Length: 553
Image 1 (tube, rainbow, N blue to C red):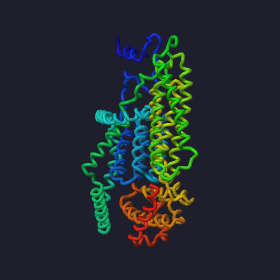
Image 2 (image 1 turned 180 degrees about the vertical axis):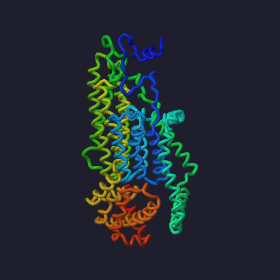
Image 3 (image 1 turned 90 degrees about the horizontal axis):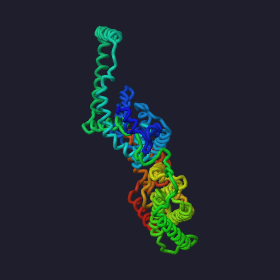
Image 4 (image 1 turned 30 degrees about the vertical axis):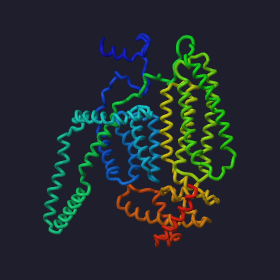
């Protein structure tokens, strides 16, 4: 039997004869036996690889801040699409590309390490989508790991095809350019030597040119670590442009529609049906009793002095979130396999819908607990994390309900859960958390509730949060007002010193929020003149502010 026949035999779906016809694989899958010859390297691909190395050197190795990373993440998808041997610009490429644009905008405004990490992850996701791979989270992780091997394979292929990089030069055309150029140089030099003043000017110009080149070489001459960085970027860039992985994971475990296939024959009773039914009845009753307790103890009541806010609203909310996550996993594990073929499945689903409603009410209770903590002493960054985390868990639970209704398989659910988690991290990284937190706490203080001042006193505030502190200069509370004046005086001193350093480091550290804060502080520095001149007085005001705020810690 020939190779072609063998390939055809392998491609037949399990349980299907060849007479039934060949079944085409999904669009984003490539048969394991069908290995296409890689496309030959082009000048466009080579140029993109070189430009990627230069850009990474400029923005990462020689860069000092988040503006450089912003430019990098804006340029990377364009360069990868331009240099890819076989670009497949599908909908996923455009979505990931748009996400990178928003991420770069936040990096220009007020960057963070989390944003940089998310940016690199999205870049790998874009490269995976560009190769035709759907950017599921697990697939993106595997795609990133294969860049080492793929980079080696791509570099070896470049070496074997190096003759294709050498353009054929016609001798006649070469001479038509070289001879006139040589004549121009020779006769030009003769004319220069014939005029002493012109010769002196030419000599000074040549000397200045070579001095400039010498200074440029001394300034930009690469060190050994930088050369190694170039090689690493070159390797990874080739691996991203010429990946070795071109199909999704676990395709043998799921069909094209990602649905659980209907089994042939009459419905059969699942051995674990009774256990699952009793489990759902038990948790439904337990959740009902607990929700009654939750509403009686934490809703519509005035909390006494010394109430354990941290235990109930912080730790308790975390435990209830864990209960929601466990309920999500439980429902997912129950409604799969032979249970879906059981004739009593409608009864099991009714129990699941009741429990699902209880879970959604429990999610509302978790949000309420966080609200209690926020109402007690204000908003913080970690409470924003909690809001995103609970929301992600709720979305995950809704996905499980969707899986049950539409008979999706387990791989479909895992991929959407990972997408949910990744999207939550991305949205949190883009959210101006300090701006939201500080603005909320400032409004609470100005409305007559001083408790949120502890969050301003204890937690560090980025530039986007400092922009919202100025209204507190008009607070009726003298301790808070003087503490904010001292804090802004110290912040201005830090901003002035940082501005000098960033001027020396260059454009890669440029941040719009830092520039805006420094401009506002300079315009309003008359409000804290004495604190700018007297460091001891500033520290005294800050200590009084911290001691006052600590009562709500």
